[in-house]
Length: 212
Image (cartoon, rainbow, N blue to C red):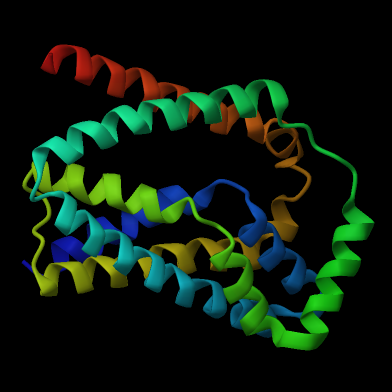
């Protein structure tokens, strides 16, 4: 029984973290420049914040789940947010060549805080996991896959941390081998993310229309 929230948390977090992002790519860069051990320390810092974010999100979701009216409002707000994100990723998000500048800033930050605190800081700047875990946990609860008990919440959060760390580990270990093969994906990552947010928006709109 206790294995279910761990597995679900792991899977949900793994899928959400799998797309190339600031944390994944930085973990890969640290591995290439400073070795696997330092990259693992960076990943541990990032995973620590994932624990905090996931826990806060699920506890917040527990409070929201007690009021159906709030859930309905959040779905409508979610449609708007994901719609804006879809437009942003498809039309306004442009990659700028600031690689050297970013690397210099990264090295500057690392020299002051260390890899663990760099991972924690960059992870804390990523606010997407909080609303993501809120919506996911509410949806899982509606599908009776998740219960808002202290034990389930804790196990789910542990699974989420494990899923995120597993992705960081994959980037750290395998990025160099597949760097050339992922070039096309990296160039078009905005379109991939935009497609995902667009699909979520459409599904949520259909759900709201059916309910009314």
